[in-house]
Amino acid sequence: MERIEPTHVLIAFDAGKTTFRTEMFADYKGGRSKTPDEFREQLPFIKEMIEKLGIRHYELANYEADDIIGTLDKMAEAPNVNFDVTIVT
Image (cartoon, rainbow, N blue to C red; front, side, top):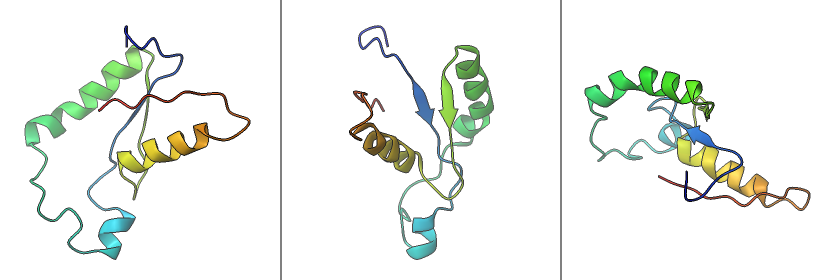
């Protein structure tokens, strides 16, 4: 963040395993390994920490974090919006 010096920051999280894609395609990401319990257990603390840092986070049921990021990136392309978007993963 020091290098990019953003004016706005948003962190997107997956809201769960079920998305509109998993409902449409039974095998969607079927080969992916399970999220480690250690990471899942830390998520509430991570969210609390980023809130205390003044960083917003967003998650939406039935959508992946990638969908949120892609939607916001597309919105930033609108003619009346003046945002450069940098995506960091």
